[in-house]
Length: 273
Length: 273
Image (cartoon, rainbow over all chains, first blue to last red; front, side):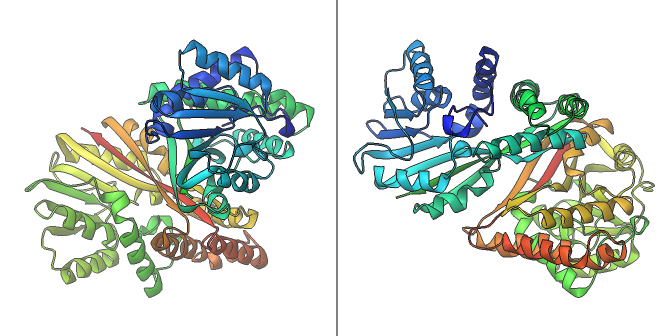
């Protein structure tokens, strides 16, 4: 799920106030599914590589209140917003640094654990990014990587315009140097970067009308709002006509009705040094 | 996953000896994922609607050795094979009857539980089939429905010919009156048929090279073999050229290599009367 502001990949999404609110809703809804099994012990040094505006930082810090978290991002603006957010929550175990994931200036073996969430989808060479992180980890330390995969999306009722609208999102992210289909690739990426005992666990968000919080929090406010957020870029690039696009968006909202179903899968990988 | 022999929907798959073996492999690999949470109490009357050649019947009977299972199928030939299979395993708590799922001749409220696995995908009117089953269930009894969904398939490396090959399977099943995308529809179907408190649980088969039993048992021997099983029909119907088809099948086998990943989702629904 896009949330980072990594300039070299261009702006796939806007960062308006409405967008920030949507991202907060998403983080709330998905916290348990993605983070319930990540807890770092007291005193352990944790690197969050690519913290964006701090949505995952808050969750990390709350789930591991006695770990010492270092959160980096390439964007000064995002870092400021992340810092503000953490300050407001009175969280005190996070330190922020500006830095490029390809060239971090920490000493080798500085960290017990590394955490990378919704970052690799925006990075032009995700394997290189992971390779650059490996030396920063102590022997026996862990890496945790979480990514979505837009190609995992399916829904009922089926609709060709809705599929095309999602494909536009994938195409725009590709043009920006990112990869919206990266979730399925975590095993070869983390293994290929030199980590061992890699385990990947898919986390499907399954939504039907018996789960109203997900209908609202995921199908409408997260996924469909995210797709609709690139409407202008899609028209600018001539990827879909206005009519087809609007039919596609309407069809995505249609899956949030009583007899609709929506499925999306995140992937969580863990590996060791 | 296709395994039933329901004549009104035509033959999407062959039933050669090799096919039977493949189906046995699949049943073995997927048993835990699909069936670990289905156990019926001693003395309870269970209807298996659409038992085919008995692959699920064996699992049902073994998981609930003291329940009394009645397994029906429309095909006399399939029933004979199912009976033979059950006899060989020395299972004694299953009774077989020939019957049409739309017109079963049991008295109302004959059963404590109903079990329907890999059947609705082959049925022209699955909602009607479920509606016809409802009166056979006692008040407070449960229904369990399991189906696959070919549209849930995604893999790495991505390949357009492989996607088209899978679409051919979906198209052939549609032409035969079935629906290979039915898994995602279980919630509206079971709810719409009049069952209450419907709960759907997706069961993703996630395969990477750290899970060699699934690479062999699912990616190769189940899914790709199943797709390749319709090669002749695809050519007969002119759905894909021979070259493109072969590239597609090769690309599916490619996902079973060390850096490949394969994902497929089954859906399990439970509901009450």
